[in-house]
Length: 299
Image 1 (cartoon, rainbow, N blue to C red):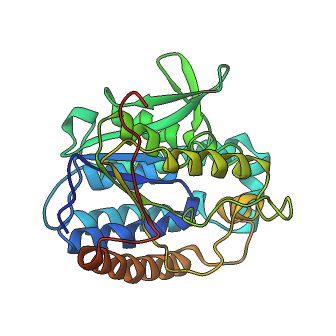
Image 2 (image 1 turned 90 degrees about the horizontal axis):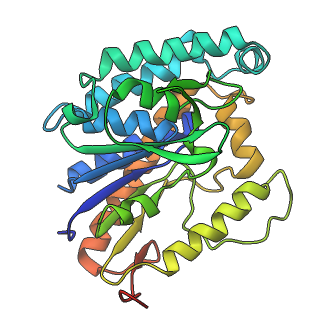
């Protein structure tokens, strides 16, 4: 498969479920697909920045080490007691923020966006205006802390006098940003599965109003792609992934799964499914997971 450039990797949010994206990165690397642009939202911002930090052999091992430490660090543990502590204690959220800062500083060599090997951007929500903000220059670490500052989990971050929280609450899968930057081929590394057609939520717990709105808007974006663009919704390799409030429960740690063990399962399943998809796409060139743009300029 020889994708037309520029090529963008879009990494979504998803808390510990973002482990899925490491398996997808491994499959993409194995297929010889390299990005010109890497975009990250929420947890995907940290994984994306670690991936964009360097090129060549060893990059995925570095990403794995960074993410595994995040999954297992005590202030960030995805257990019910830790989740409750972060929910009610500002001090616990500040400790979580300091922990993330320490980990990314240790594993990501770049200190500014310009020092990264691949063009990288991440989004956050500016408090007060509730508008999406894209970080694409200047200091890298404050931007990553802003992008991953999930409310009631990690303390919000102040950058240049403005406070920011997790960008995934507004735009968890920023394909629109990739198209804005001129990407012609976009690979969506998703923690959940947005390839299925949107449907009206059967229960609030199953999807929730926010995800319902996002999925309809996301589907509209995919149906209105510019001519000549391709968007690949990479498979996660798992059945019945969580959505809506159920997904938030998993992100915040209100479950009994062991984060590292679960993360390894997500990585392996996504690697197997994505590698198979890329091989088939390279041979056939058609898939329900690939969206091809037909909208002509000015239409």
